[in-house]
Image (cartoon, rainbow, N blue to C red; front, side):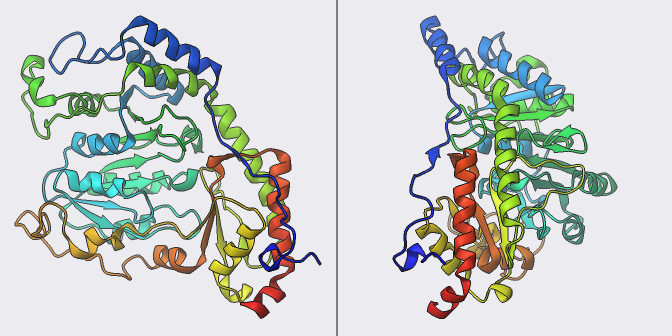
Length: 427
């Protein structure tokens, strides 16, 4: 039995993983052409022919519409901007409640607060880590106006169940597929089956333009409102003849010509890049599925996984070792990108103290908040247990992983698992 590196043995992985980089010569050439044109942006915040941006913005949006098979694609300068625009575009008003998952980047919930609406957190499914439809329904009140689901780590949420709930209660469904471009849910690309969805384009995603986001919808009215919120709506509605100015508080959420030129080339690569992640993950699962006390990722029927993360669950009782010691041992063997837990947004200081705008508890302390919404520990027990003790992730989207790299990672896991008795003795 090889001695663990944590106790002075040789590492299972001697060569560091190569950082993931999807940018190539095609993007460099596309950027060069934009720079030579002298037109880095062609937006005007007035009702004019340049309200919708320049040629590359429009080209990228048309390419996204074709790729994702949707009527409308709207680019924005970040996915945080995209989420904020989506919440405003579906008509969320101050005091409205939006049900959201706690397992997400904080911006998902903050986009709700942006409009002075109230985030309500529902628990997650223990197999996919996505929002649990049963918990969503249990959290619906007369003030609920929307559901925001996240296709976390690259696995689609249960959109059919969520849409059924949304239709029954007259709610809008927003999907945050920041981590899941290129995965499929029942034959449709993830993110395209809700009222409005979209994807992130920042640097550690499958494809990226530095920063950026893509909103997708098949609803003409929502699409128009997204474009208005993106580009100084309040200055444009009069010229466009729009009389419903609800949430027409404009911003500058515009993505430039350089980023869109990069996006055009990146989008062409997306299927191949996702396939590479899937093959690496499937090979890793083949190696790890027999390890006692470790659950490899689960992919639900009629779904595919794009593996932004490789999510695992540890059975601490079976292992007899805390997660931190397992991660310490694997890291010593040369495994990089391991995460202990993910996040519980409802336990962040902003929600625990109910302080967002100013220091007096707005919006929760104001008349627009029509009930006492709880963010106490215990409201999302599945998410909280996974975060505190049992979830372990591998950031596969941060590195290029050859077949040899995958085998080396698997060997590191096998080495640690073959030394579990020794780890228990030395814990």
